[in-house]
Length: 68
Image (cartoon, rainbow, N blue to C red):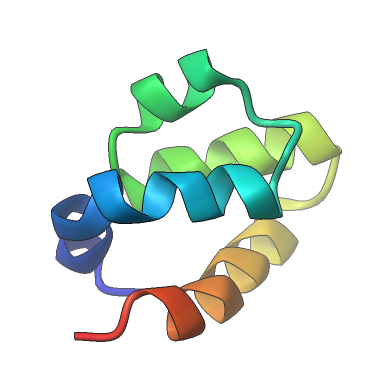
């Protein structure tokens, strides 16, 4: 995932992030602020999955939500 893409579109896509990963809190979304590494970390933490799996899921999700 292109880090700048997520940061640049964060306002538009954070609702989709919340819809996909409903266990993320509003405070989590505020903390993440479009940082892909923080997003992966929060998903790993909230869902109890390995970092690589969280990254794979974020990358897969971003293919449909972060078109240039």
